[in-house]
Image 1 (cartoon, rainbow, N blue to C red):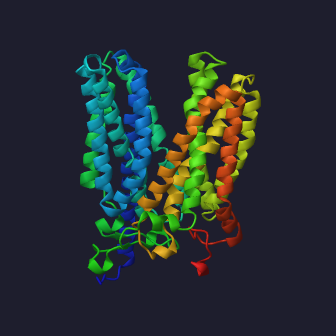
Image 2 (image 1 turned 90 degrees about the horizontal axis):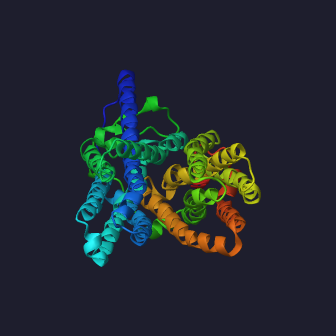
Image 3 (image 1 turned 135 degrees about the horizontal axis):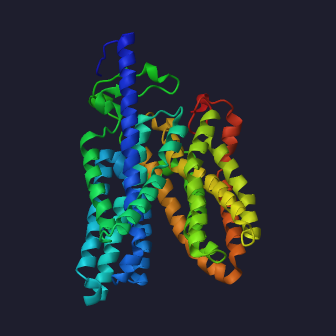
Length: 465
């Protein structure tokens, strides 16, 4: 076992400052990693009209979207395990390079005009590019969460992860602005694919070269949850005796307390989010002109950004009782969905804007926190005996399960709307919210019964770990 020299107060202060500096750097790089992923996704969706004009019809575009969603869900399970097994920074970098490859392939297929010379082959090529793209993009959530979880202790993690999960919205906004600027200034529309492709590739190099996976990589140790950051100590590179435990398997991860419950519950919450995201503009266009409908629906996405910050911050104030905070948010969402079902068609625009913003906060907060801070908490269960190589697998299970449930549930929305009208769709989402919240009942009861647990991540008392 490696021995360390006792640190003086001056050494400790310098080491703590160094740790904070690295934490800021890791936060920034991983934030940009996920923003880059959404930058490339959103830029692609923003030029769908141009793709259609180039001959890529709606059938191919629909197949590409479905294929991407399917492989993204499956890839989440795989990526999480890869992040636990290999260097997370390398895995994320490969994912970013994969986006570069896939967007470049789509651009190349367009320029060769293969869709007009051989439609069947073109359909296979475009679909294949997006299937592979979904796998590469799936590295974003689970693996970046692995890196963040290794750098930030449980105490205060909620607020940090809440701020961090704004990455996806920043990526979407930048993509919209960048695409509008390029097209508005007369750039060839294919640059809306190539700019994010090049950006992803360049940022992958940052991950390969200057992103440390954990404090031990740079000779630091993370302070304990009961200590202040100023008590951080330096730590030499781990020896064989100090090496972390082996990665855990899917079955072992599923057996961790509350992982399965959260995975299924998150599926219903994510379905609610996806239904609002995909169908709101269409629904609102029935009552407003298309431009107004897009502006009004955007308030839902805007509300999602502070949602994660609020849930994370409040759950930190409540000593890490994240399930209780999530449940409160989802319960508050139910009457708002009910109001939307009854009065959205006749509600004045200002009131509708406020309602959608509030709904975005209530949906976005739980969705963002479950796949970040909650997953990190669950992966810290005492039964793992300090093994830190579980977070990617746990996050992948939660994210992948949620994506599959959401994809299947979205298939119901269209037929339900045709069969029973839009009110039935909103009532269906109320049912989804209620089921998801009910699935969290065991965890909620543990948090309520445990009292002041001192940030026990998994809902057990200190003596029962």
